[in-house]
Image 1 (cartoon, rainbow, N blue to C red):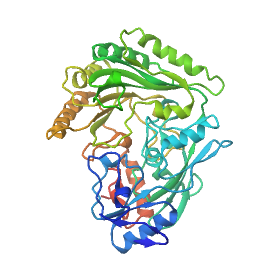
Image 2: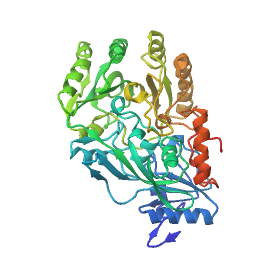
Image 3: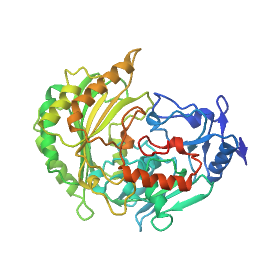
Image 4: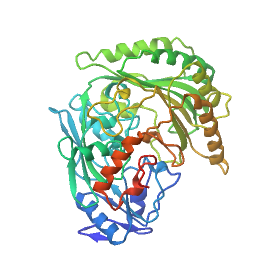
Length: 458
């Protein structure tokens, strides 16, 4: 379908289709009827007109990192948003305008030039819009809260094909719902995000052989009991493959590590080093680390310093939010994911929550905070004919072991499977969000894009 000089939607086999349907999680690649890459608002509006003319649903993605948890895309037009315009930083107001399709590394680079940082996650390759509006947990999360709480305005094309800018003054109801309400409101073309001061940041990880697993977990657990909000850390059990992109010390073996990011303060950048020494001191008394990457750096380096995959792969996994990491909870985690468990997981991770992540701001959106102490995230890549079934069985084992500590809630950006239980909104919030959806999309043009558990309209 052509509208103006650019081809906006292509059928399978036509130029542009493969590029538009490319995703990070190759487990279930999307196969919509038509797909195209939108570089302008006009492109988005042309694709919506085409979808209505052909009586097709509209689906949206940018980098495709959330593909594993997306519904099948049969009778739909998929719009891949790669909007032109570039990142624009307003250093006086500490704001950045980000076109849809932009990845976090670009935002981190632009902000760092002014001594500012953005609420990104562990990978600079992830798209800003999906991560921000679906409740991303930032590497600075314990200090700044969920990433969506930093969103100050959203630009989107709604089902009537009008471009809207929504913020606390302009359509506050839609602005509230689009921040964590589960999607299905329109095609987001840009977001405006608040930045925060950060000139020097301490970030990295230390890894030990599997023989130190119980000792490392115990030290980290003790430290998180009263950790300062400037520190956002995680514990990771890795079973990484023997591949060139994996650091040599971590290849083809089981290791346990503590990774994280620690902020200084605007008045005292040395605070980052002081807090890091408080964390790392007890850990560094544990003998035999195989790799230590902690470093003092500028914020633009943080998005590249974390050990996160940057190559597309078929990914499976599971996610829970945990109420505690008591002795029984820690034992359940180790028994089901640690050495000797037979775990096929490439990574079994516990992320420390609390701090600002637990505080619902008055100006927050539909999803405002995490009422949990830790997040569990298990990730695996299936190999061989029985790989997927083996992973599914083991995920069930881990879920059963951690069930006594499961809050029953999740955060959408950590979900890798459509079949996984999902619940991040209260019942009354779901009803309120649905009222907004019915107002802006009465015909359900975007309904298939709604995160499971976020609506009663499906």
